[in-house]
Image (cartoon, rainbow, N blue to C red; front, top):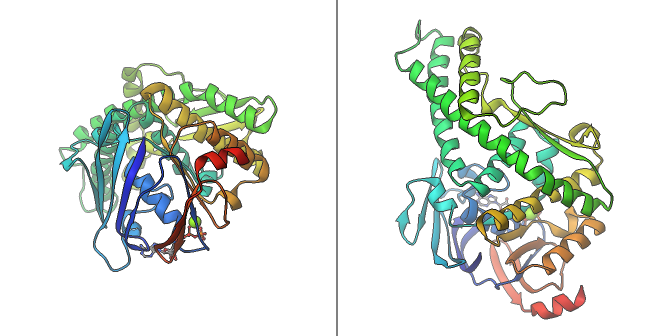
Length: 384
Ligand SMILES: Nc1ncnc2c1ncn2[C@@H]1O[C@H](COP(=O)(O)OP(=O)(O)OP(=O)(O)O)[C@@H](O)[C@H]1O
Ligand SMILES: [Mg+2]
């Protein structure tokens, strides 16, 4: 996939910007705080409807404005058209060739972007929400409908939580009639979410291990374990994929068993929104024991596996966004990534505070492109 032209309007520090990126390599260069990450974030938003910085809608809209717009003319295999995302403080609205997409999967199924960002370290080091977000994003690559499933699950969960909250605050003395409907919905959709996630982990493990060993330059045993509170597992054990029906029954039973506790808590205490993943290197949990270098190699491997999955399952060559290239990667991983990028036909957007002779450079200054400098890709290839 690649973008032929990009337009930003009232997006973060960009009042208005139009850009015609190169088909292959685009370097976004500038001093700190000028808008480099924001520009990459806009491309990421166009491709995945999410900010790779985990930003809320409100944060994407320019200060004191009511909406932001990112649009781009894209080509993806035989598909060609204009993708457009409008962001409002409370919601987003995506269209393709002017048509609203009823389901997230309709839009996401057309586009392919993978981001490499400093915040990826949070996947390993941060709270469980970063790991859930990673696995959900990966699941959407193989199966765009996972995004619809997540949206429906979140809605059912919100409805169930609203009733539990009222109970816990004493606003109602017993659950309303629709409570059991939402409980069943949470169990049904939650089972599907868990199933998709375990399937994703099972399918990605080998690729991640392969990339990791290659980057680290030594054979390493990489393990990824999905951890669900509703599943009694041995230490070190991984829930097997099982059937969706089995997950449904297990989750529904857990919801019933935890009901009393939840009435006090005012929220649903079990389900995929509380699950986690554990990454280990040679049997040691990466979150607690991984060195900075090991964790960096691991997150790089996670993203490369995502790219590979796009290629294998959807036959697509995604756009690659590489944020903060110079400061985030040490020379070993930088060299690895450059060699990797050089061997591909992907459109790349790479941000840096340095001047790098890697291809066309756009210089960003206070939310504007101040100049661009064209360096043919062939010269870049010769330098590597
Ligand atoms: N919603 C917003 N409206 C207006 N400006 C914003 C908004 N959100 C962020 N900014 C500003 O945009 C500027 C650019 O931020 P960005 O993260 O893109 O910079 P950067 O070039 O990547 O910097 P660094 O090199 O430090 O990573 C910052 O000064 C930030 O305060
Ligand atoms: Mg930045």
